[in-house]
Amino acid sequence: MKHFALVVLFSGLAMAAASAGFAADSPPVPTVRGHPFVCTDYTQGKVFVVSIDGRVEWEYPAPSCNDIWVLPNGNLLFNTGHGVKEVTRGKQTVFCYESQSAIYACQRLADGNTFIGECNSGRLLEVAPDGRIVKEVRLLPAGQDGGGAFMRNARRLDNGHYLVAHYGLDVVREYDGTGKIVTEIPAPGGPHSAIRLPDGHTLIACADRKSGRPHVFEVDPAGRPVWEVQTDELPGIRLMFMTGLQRLPNGNTVLTNWLGHDHFGEAPHVIEVTRDKQVVWSFADHATMRTISSIQLLDVPGDATRGEIWH
Image (cartoon, rainbow, N blue to C red):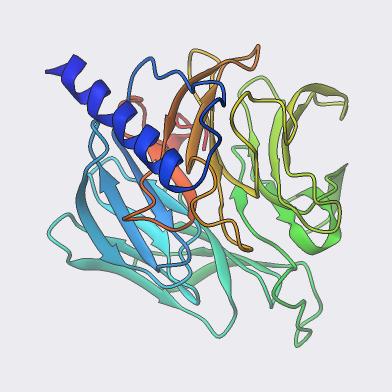
């Protein structure tokens, strides 16, 4: 049955590629195995649960969704344009936060609170289950609007610091618990997501802003590059606008390839690459999805609230 599922997935990808106009002589994209996963479709405003054979098993409306987590209880936590929701598989809302600011980042913390990054206001918030703001860190003066490009994804780190992808500033910054800049990593092209890995390295996905050269790169604690994937390095695949990331325990990296800005259907939505940049899995369903912006695999064990999922 597992073999059949992989054949279905690979065949679906091949048909999607053909319908998108990929060259017939393009190098084939190998598929070693599939993954079940959850993802956000920013353009359609939906979150999906997808089976190992690439079929949508569950979906829920979420305008401008950009970040998603599978919680230990099986519920999904995701942003909704100007808010954040936790929803059960029975589609019951059990947590909700709303704001006038655009929101692109959310994260459930080990203490049960929810971290939320407000883009326009530049506020980093920790919100209790009952909706009370229990901590607020301002990266902008009160009343100042940083605009829709001020930040994309952000994470609260185990040490109480915050890692923020400043899309419009072309930098990733780590802030301490008071909002003071601790480190700054240049990220040309517009950083969309940044992950602090267990070894202290930082993995960053950059978009197509100004440079037009989407890429993913990793730096060590001193800011020195140790790994990267550039726009045209993967045979048969072009990186269009890099958004979500997940580093797997085996060292592979899962990338979401956002296909907006007139690139609908032109490449896979999701790509898994090894450290030596071999593509071992990819996913595309251009009939159902438009622009996948965040992903979490369901076959990687770990408690997302305790830093055991690197996403």
